[in-house]
Amino acid sequence: MKKSPGKRPHERNRREGLLRACARLFREKGFDGTTIRDISQAAGMRSGSPFYHFRTKQDMLVAVMEQGLSAGLHHLEAVAALKLAPAEKFRQLVRVHLGTLCEDGHDFIPVMLYDWRSLTSANRRRIIALKDRYDALWQRATDELQAQGSMPGDAQLARLFTFGALNWTARWYRAGGRKSLDEIADEAARFLLRQQAPARLARVAR
Amino acid sequence: MKKSPGKRPHERNRREGLLRACARLFREKGFDGTTIRDISQAAGMRSGSPFYHFRTKQDMLVAVMEQGLSAGLHHLEAVAALKLAPAEKFRQLVRVHLGTLCEDGHDFIPVMLYDWRSLTSANRRRIIALKDRYDALWQRATDELQAQGSMPGDAQLARLFTFGALNWTARWYRAGGRKSLDEIADEAARFLLRQQAPARLARVAR
DNA sequence: CCTACCGATCGGTAGG
DNA sequence: CCTACCGATCGGTAGG
Image (tube, rainbow over all chains, first blue to last red):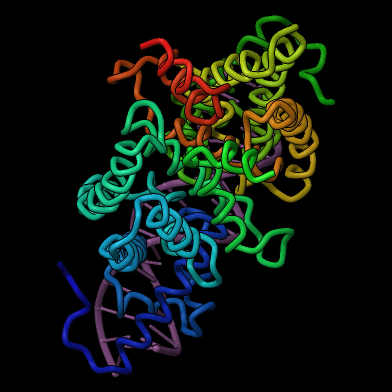
């Protein structure tokens, strides 16, 4: 684990700002479509300066993905540890995940989703180690739902379909649109879950 | 509609081969990560020759997306026109869509999904016109399902979640894997649909 | 972190 | 469709 080494606080701040600029630009224009000069300008530096913080442009890409994944994982694991009914836990996982994809400034995970193919194969292996933990967490949540009959069919496919439905939001969600992120998270959970016979309860209630 | 103009058959063939090479390479390495020299070599030409068929590299990208969308639309509209129950029609639409995403040589639509941001805004408008028809077709299918209670919640969100679950397969599906594309299509339809009380029927049958 | 710079590569073109 | 080429831009570096 190459955390940023023992540097002065000022340098750490500068590095973080650089990384945010990378994340935003990579998401918007793609890794290959973003130049060092774009990044330098966005971070308020001259074109040679980013290389004081990162050895190569490829290193900036890995750093963005690693930071996004480990922050996301941290938040999700906090939710997963709560004592909640599976469906309620799922709902909260969905909300957190949508936050990491769509909330303002959260460009790190989308970069991972959309610029995966720009990683060298060595770096890909490094990121896969983190991604595996991400997948495993969701797989456990999915398995719990399946055990109580709230999700049908093959468990691994169910997780992949779920991921797809959620990750796709990064493509179409716009802040200030017809639905808030909270509403979208609720709808997504309802769409993905087989509710425990709510139709029958509703019928009885009338 | 700029179809390829009245050229000799040999030239049309050459152009088609070039487009297939573009689609495969753009999908694999991205538009910005693919060079004219990559494309030329894959098509068996020298580096200046693709420009005999296309004015710019950007034109190759639009042509790939346009061809993918209009071919996909053609297949989907054939299914949509069939007289079928909504759930069965949906199942078949899913299968066709997964084919355009995952079958061998079908790289055109994935390029549209993954290289959207490389389009100039003028070209984006051209492609959106086609994409709107694609979306409308799926929206009609979704609305029919919703009318009979097989899909819950907001109709537009239901379509977007469906698209996400399906489009994501282009990311993880590998030919020769644990499940065939037919099986995945069946599982996807089952996952996305609220079946008409199959659980109760199953219980009665025991 | 800036200045000044380099070699490589890129999309594209002229002329045949 | 090939040959030969060009101007621009790119990632990256040396030296301070």
